[in-house]
Amino acid sequence: MSARTDVEAQETQASTGVTPDTLGATLKEKLEASHVDIQDLSGGCGQMFEAVIVSPQFTKKTTLARHRLVNGTLKEEIAAIHAWTPKCYTPEEWEKKKAG
Image (tube, rainbow, N blue to C red; front, side):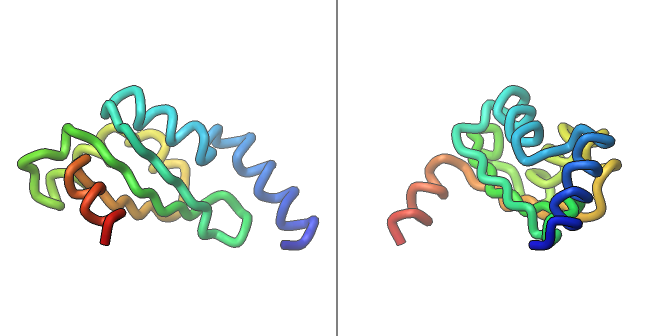
């Protein structure tokens, strides 16, 4: 990453308030997520994130319902960034995925 990109990322995150840490904290608090891993895929501009989210609130929900729950929880944050890709798992699904 260039210094310019790092500075741009810091400026973008400062102006929007959206960082992997703030996204993770919100998900843990509002969705009772037991595991959250958020990656910045934007090359440093802080505008494209992919997340792995593990929450018991996803139990008996379709993938679409899980995404809607997450997107509703992060509505303001998602509006401030360019791209958001959640991968949602129940605790049981996550344990199977980790073991496999």
